Length: 110
Image (cartoon, rainbow, N blue to C red; front, side):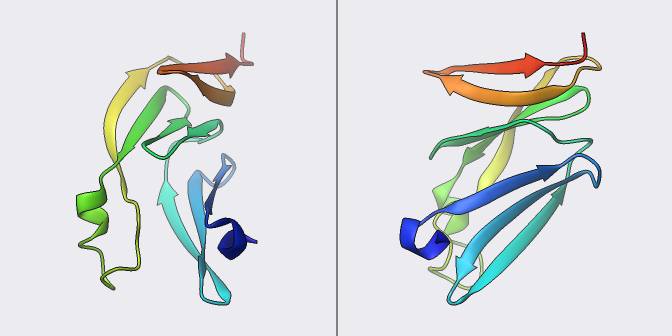
């Protein structure tokens, strides 16, 4: 399905404190893990990825020039690098989405 749609899938697991990126690699699935403090909500488009964590929102931006340098050459079409960090305090961000350039999220802690 990932091959057919030409996509990757981002999964957050706050219990393990990880963001998991899944992508097709031929006939198998390749996984890439990154640690974030209690990641929950996610929002993404072709240029940015936002991750809601324990005390902050991380915003990562796609940097194609970096993707071109990752081994093996020509295999990666995107590389998301941290660019902004918004401190929210101790809230639970479960749902996130972009409305134009604005990032909206749902806080379920209050």
